[in-house]
Structure formats: C-alpha cells, structure tokens
Length: 561
Image (tube, rainbow, N blue to C red; front, side, top):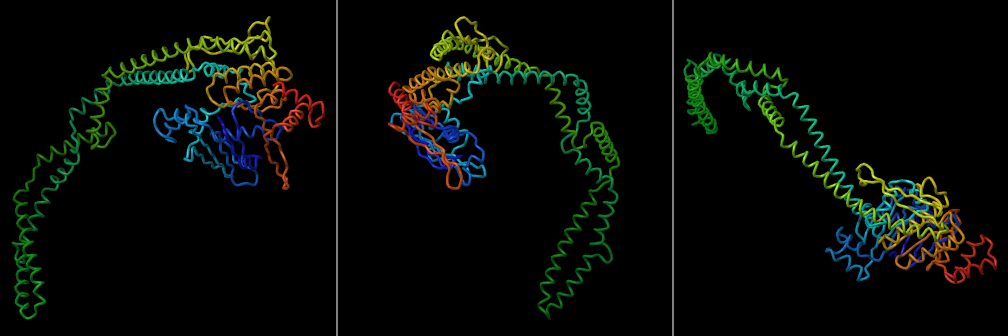
C-alpha cells in the first residue's frame, strides 16, 4: 500500500508531500492542473524512463520518493535482491511487523538519474521489478489496446493468474526453437561437409605420407644451412686453431711474451700487477678456445649424402606448403585439423543427439502449452461471465463478452490466439470487439475488464488514470460504486473528471495549477473534506460558477455514496 509520496521540481510540481490511507482515493482538478503528473511521478520513482525536460524549468534536479507498506511478495523480493534480510520468510515477517519500503529516484537537468531502494543504490530494472509487486496502473487510453489480439491474450492470462504459466510456455518455445535451429544448422553443415569428404580424405592421405612433425621445419632448415656450409665451417675452425697455438706468430705465444715482460716490469711498478693477472686469465681462455676448436675440427665432417637427403625433404615440404597454401611450418597443424574435420564428418552421434534434443524440447513445449490451453479455457469462461456481469451495471443491459480461444500454429503465446467477442445487447450476436464496439461502448467494456482484471490482481495498490472517460450519468455513478467496492480489499486511486466518481472516494485530493510571480506554472495539492469537498464536487457539477443548487446536489451525492 502507498503510504506517502514526496515530489520536488517534477514537471510543474514545485514541492508537495502527500500521505494516503487505505480504501478509495480520488484525485480531481481542472484539465492541465497536474493530476496525471502525480501518477507519472509515482511511475518515475518505480523505474519508468523520463527525459531531462521532466525536471521543472529553472531547476537543477527533480526528486520523487514513495513510501509503501511492505507486502509479503515485495518483502520476499527485497530479501532475494539483497535489499533486506535474507530468507524465504523475510517477506512475511516484514509484512507482519509493519515494515515499510522507501523508493527514491532523482533526475538532473542533463538526464542522469540515480535510484535507491531502502537507501541502497538500485537499477531501473530493479525498480520496475519491485514496482510490479507494489502497484498496477490502468491508463486512460488502455482500452484501445483491447483491439489487439496480443493484448487480449495477456489480459486473459493476467486475469486468470496464468502469467507465470504463459511465461513458462514462452520460454519452452524459445528453447525448442533454439534446439531445432541447432539441429537444422548441424544437418545442413553435415550435408555440405560430406560433399568435401573425398577431398579431405585425399589431403589426409597425402599429408600422412609426408608425415610432417611439429618443429621439423625449423630443425631441418638449420641442418641444411650447416651441411651446405660444411667446408667453410671446417676451414674457418682450422684457421682459428692454428692462429691461436700453431702459427709462427701464434696469439698464445705472443701473449706469453707480453706477460713475461710485464711481469718483470711489475717489480718496479706494482700498478702493472693487475694487468699481468688479466692477461694471464686471457691466456687460459685462449687455451680453452683452442682445445674446443681442435675438437670441432676432429668431429666436423662434410656429408654430401645427408645434405642431399635434407634438401630433398625441404623440397617436399615446400611443395606441400604451396599446394595447400600455408607455410611449411604449418603443415603438421593442417594435418591435425584436417583429420579432426574428417572424423567429425564420419561421426553421427552428435547430430542424433541434437535431433533427440529438439524432439525433447518440442514435447516439453507441447505439454506446457496443452496445460495452459486447458487452464485458459476455464479462465476464459470465468472472465466472460465476470465482465458480462459488470457490463450490466454500465448501461449495457443484455450485452455480453465472450472470450474465445482460436486454434493457431504453435508460438511463444501457446497453441491458440485469444479473441474477445462482444454483443452490445441481448439480441445481437457476438462479434470481434474491434468491429462492433463504438467509442463509448469500448470505454465501458474496457472499464468493466479493468475492474474485473484488477480484482484478480494481487497487487495491493491499483491506479485508474481517467479510465472513466466517455461515460456519464448513472453509468458514472456505477463506476464510482465499483471502484469504491474494489477499495474495500485494495488501495485504489482514480484520476477523474466525473463528480459521480469523485463523490464515492474515501479520500479526496484536489490538484490546482497556479502561476508564480516569475510566470512559471506550479501545481498544488490539497486534501479535501467537509465544505471544501462539497465545493469541489459542485465545481465538477456546474463548472466555474458554483450555485446553491450545485452545492445542494454535491451534498446529496456525498451523502448517498
């Protein structure tokens, strides 16, 4: 239940604080005064999108806060979403303890908004999810959607408490379609790939004979370079070994002479000693290098036969790489991927599993859809009776609504489409709503459906935004009585221009538009009672001029509600 609403700088509302009670609350006022803005502000607080111009002209930020009594579903949602204590029983405890839910949202002039639930930051999606558990809004043009089959189906499911089952059917249908698509695509891919099976087999056979190994290309390329330059390598190693140790002016002999002379001189100048030590170390390194060079020469042999084999292998790898348009080093990977592709073509288990999966998801969808169809049959008959009964009270004596289920191709909405058929009077046959209802009749039928649907809705707060447009007289009085009756089990709000409806309210809030000194319009609210309420009902009856007669009539209407 909505307990309080606070609005600052929202459209033409400067600042207002409203508190609400249970029962039936009416909001009245001149056209353009801002009655529907209050509803818009409440919906904004619960996640509806708003443009930057929603911020009141000349202001930096709009803010709307709403306080609700915690219902069991809303409390459970808060627990699941992490905005309250955890545990399945949290919602019931919250409702039993009289806990409240505070929703607040701001919007700055740049269009940036921030949202909070019980003081914690929240997303718009979370606001909308919570809002769906707190209130339900019936707009003044909502009856126009009754002309569309999809809206009729949704209304039947909502009225019959079948929304969850319908959602499960839609989800099962989507799963079935995905499974069928996966099977169809796999089957098409199998057929396409089978056409190239021979070519893949030939590729595997040729590459298997070639037998390229991972890393082979790098190894054999290095070996080819070594073998191709074998003579130059041997000659160079011999030259280096002789230059170090065996030549007349060998490096090692010359270094020994240098060390001996400096050693003698170091006796006269100790600063030469580190140099002598460094040269001695160089001599050791030259000795080691000469030994390794001699070993290299002893082991280095030119192998023309091996060189021929290596170059032949390189040629084969090059030829294969050119044929399959890849680098020689990629041939092992190509062989592995081609084998894997060929194995996939030769397997049938995956395709069969996909086919079985598609059949299983189809059967699951059919089971859910058939169960939904049966439940819809009962809900359609019940809704038809209830709306027909409400139509009798709305000056459509003898009229009736028939909710028909027409078999259709399987879809996300089930195995049938929903069609509302109406007869405006007892002698008329039932025909599609769009073909027989006039504007006024459509408004009354829409109102009857809205009242019936609202009665089936477990949301604690219901809002009717000028849904009584197009009716008057005794019908308007009936509308007021129906909404007051509905307010005995729910909190009901109605924005109305009809005095017959306004006089039925348990609480009456008037909305006025004023002009400030700077020329900007501003909306004000006032909770009415006593003579102020009589004056407002009289205004609604007689316009700007309130007479003694209209005041008397207003008092009579309030007394007879």
